[in-house]
Image 1: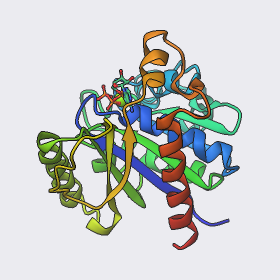
Image 2: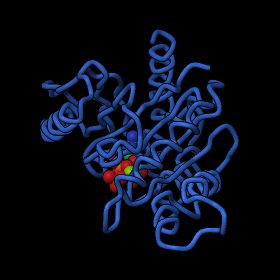
Image 3: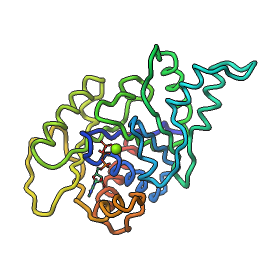
Length: 251
Ligand SMILES: Nc1ncnc2c1ncn2[C@@H]1O[C@H](COP(=O)(O)OP(=O)(O)OP(=O)(O)O)[C@@H](O)[C@H]1O
Ligand SMILES: [Mg+2]
């Protein structure tokens, strides 16, 4: 089987990374590109809520436990981490989810980061697509726990300030060794009639409209993926998913 196509989302706080990630995951699922592996790489994990899934444990807390607590007799720490890793994975309908938790606590985590990277790499082979909700600093990508994404979507508000932040995020990604050709801009919460500000740091891949259905779902604490089939944000992100499937095929 081909290696998974990895899509990571980054962007300034509150720009819509989690919303976009959840709708992208749902669009890939509906297009039959299953199972999708959802990776919540934000220490303040909430992708599961957007997807309507329940997470009880993160890889970070599992790792903490594996390295501070005695493990079953006769079992290597390595084998224990691999075993527990499978338990941290939440399985849903067409979507499995793993939450990374905090990137590290105190002490040296190089060894355990390598272990996590190995577990994740082994796991990913069964998924055609992996979608990673990463925070602005892209800590987990920097630490190598998640492999290098095939595509980085930089999510931004419309407007000049949003573009400046997107430029900074592009530069962080470049410093992590991500080629510029793999980065695309998602402008979110676009209002009808708003002028294009220009100055995009990377090519624009989609404009996602400001969508009252997203706000309503959020206010009512309903999963984002429960918004109606014809919601403007969903339709825009379905077009994005189609582009991503095309890129994966042409890889
Ligand atoms: N297209 C949209 N239309 C309307 N509201 C939106 C849209 N996208 C996001 N929102 C709202 O904006 C807020 C922030 O969205 P979201 O949580 O997805 O951003 P984030 O970048 O993941 O934030 P954080 O940095 O806190 O992780 C939420 O209240 C969400 O409902
Ligand atoms: Mg988020």
